Amino acid sequence: MSDVGSVSTPGAAVSRPGAAVFRPGAAKIAKVLLFFTSLVPLVLLVHGARTNNLGANPAETIQLTTGHWAFRFLLLTLTITPVRRLTGWNIVIRYRRMLGLFAFFYACCHFAAYWAFDLNFAIGAMLGDVAKRPFITMGFAAFLSMAPLALTSTKGWIRRLGRNWTRLHRLIYVSGVCAAIHFAWKVKVFAGAPVRYALAVVLLLGFRVFWVLLKDRRARALKSAL
Amino acid sequence: MLIKRPADIPSSEITDERLYLRRRDFMQIGAGLIGAAAGGLLAACGRNAVDAAMPPANMPEPQTPLTGIKGRMVTVTDPPNSFQDITNYNNFYEFGTNKGDPAKYAGQLKTSPWTVKIDGHCNKPGEYHIEDLIKMSDLEERVYRHRCVEAWSMVIPWVGLPLSSIIKRADPQPKATFVQMWTLSRPSEMPGLRSDVLNWPYTEGLRMDEAMHPLTILAVGLYGKTLLNQNGAPVRLVVPWKYGFKGIKSIVRISFVDKMPMTSWVEENPSWYGFYSNVNPGVNPVRWDQSHERALPSLFSTRKTEIFNGYGDQVASMYANLDLRKWY
Image 1 (cartoon, each protein chain N blue to C red):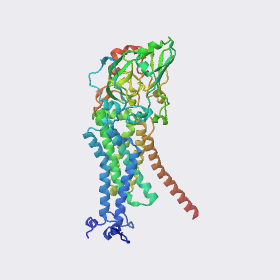
Image 2: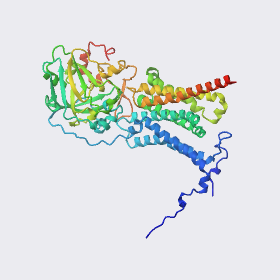
Image 3: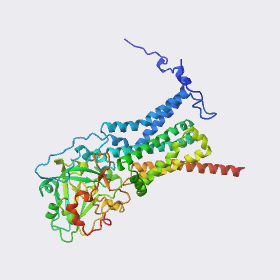
Image 4: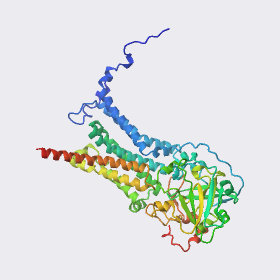
């Protein structure tokens, strides 16, 4: 009876003392699974493009699809902390980095599709567009604000930045808000998908505000009790 | 022969000890799977993203060939877009705000019987069956460039009749300076009406000289056959030098009025849309960049948009005294 799990580096999947010890192999399998699942939208898009099956406006289909998925992964990334707090299910933190990186990956595809198809990769026109059209400005801000987070997502940077890493990575709240405004201003009428996404952002950020207030109240209650 | 089932737990239901010992690992993999499922749920959050990649197979719809098409006017050198593209990529918010919605949901609209009411400041108002309206003038094929305000364009072979022929028959009075039109509003067959994205019914308008212009047609067909519902069956307006949204679909009423009418899109956002909405690469309300367009199905937005969509030599004189920056 061989155990695949024991082959990997021992301790690699142990996140903190006191946490249940899981076999590292399983964590790897889950991560690989998540990785390939996250690539499915891209594969579908490439397949659609190759089979000439992206509708009458393939450029727009590519722009919309990559934008939607960037936003979805951003929302998933923002869901990790509430899930942990509400369920105590700390396992999920292990997948946050990958989700965040996929958000940035799809945002890169989204930006590239806009820059290529709308502006033929002209730099001046792109910068002019960013300056001139508010919804583009917002999208660009969302995109830019995610870049430092992706760059500092490595173990080395987490160590080097220490407490500041957490502070820096609160920038994702800005990304979420900018993305929601970008989508809301992009559409001709604010209905359907952009409303649902904006609500999701409000809910996820609202949870954090609520959590901080709750902690504050508890702390004050404790103080007055002493 | 009687086959007896064993009474105790079948061996297939006993968990292998090796698997049992790894149960926590499966929970972990489960976490990954739930994550993926959450992704699926989020996918439902913006339904159109994947759908858009797979346009629905176009069901054959009741399209009748139009007989008696007398002339053919081709105004562009590019070949027309495919029937598939013209009928599956539409803005018709009465059926939903996604481009694929009209093709999906417009099939339920009953376009027969259909009447168009003509009223307002005219000497011969009336209500006409669509069959009679079509007979008011010879049908003609018009191959026009259709320029959407969203900065894409298609070449479309419409079949229609000049709006002027219908206006002349109604005999408008001198104080009729504008023409206003309305789209059908029938919630039972138009699911988009349930959300108030626009102030229904959809309404558009033209100045009288624009309405009388020979390029302005009421289209009743596409590619030699009657219109599909998603394109505005049974009768819609086509004004090739204006942005596509001026081309009001599924018209039920045409009225002669003495003031510039409020239109649906101007009402929705007056800083983005103007009454005239002439195609103009030099006028870019803050939302839009109209300097270029994507000539579908091209990927790249490299076609330089022409003033009046290239029809300037025929229509520019109507706007000689108009500041086009102010009156966009």
